[in-house]
Length: 402
Image 1: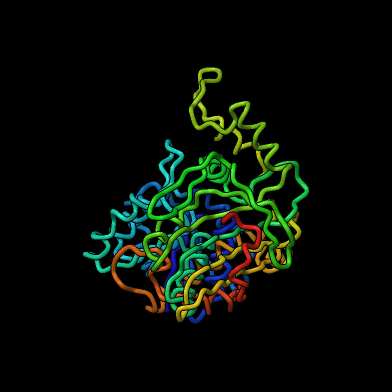
Image 2 (image 1 turned 45 degrees about the horizontal axis):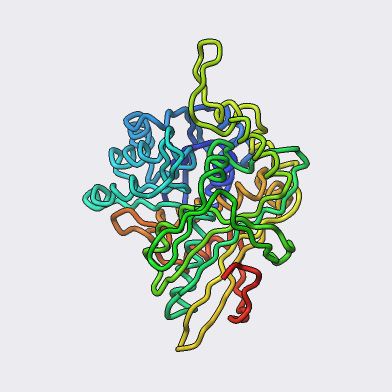
């Protein structure tokens, strides 16, 4: 049995806390901490049995976090705070001598660029400390990485092409809102697209490549090529890879709002001075947009996230589609969140379970596809995210650009 410390009381933190509380065979104590203790208390009060304890912590303060983790005897830390805080929380885990898990890679607050180099630089420190750090244990990255690991382990001798497809067909009825932290979400979407092919990165203008893909249980949705963080590690770890891309759905209404905001400078992170006070326009926009945590009771519909693989098995070309479909209303009925938070939080809790039960435990810093996918995907299905494997016609492009 283990004691888990969860940092971050947003929508994903709510799901991780609920799920860890359900895992009574893995966790005998669950702590939830954030900068605002009242948010932690609200989540704890929604979980029966009084299993969750709460605390106020500044995640930017590694020493404070390490001292608290040591004082309560935490066995591992799950970071579902902001990506800006990844490094301080990794430092805290090294100080406290406990494993680390997160769902998104580090991004400097003043540079709209997320990549793994800063966290990969911690490998030797975690190895020497005999500690495990698991990066990107959400859905994408996270479960999509594990679909890749599963395909590599069971379905292919070599995987040549991967397309990761992320569809949110939910409708919250609001004119414009983001499904997770608006600042992170908009920085991601407005950046240049990028994909890996033939050993190099190819950059595209933001949202300039589109395909109309027919998502099972959802239907045909416009999908746009983005750069997404799991591509950075997967292009290194998949045998025989020739190309890997990431696609995400956006409605015309959403993109119209986004373009207007860009055109008037509201998505900029360059500070402007207003009445003697400097503020980032994007930070202001975040403050006036709906809180993603408030979307749970409003959002109706489904998500579909998965991967299409094209490669070789036994000398023959094969194509498979591995995916999950999640229902917004079901997520809200169970844990009080919409499916975007649910699909990120369930995998993070399952990764914590893998570490707590010593199923994963090799010292170092690991991306998800470097770990055993089978017990993790079994746990993910058990705790709310069942997945399907479809064999496809290898000659059909399924409307994806060749």
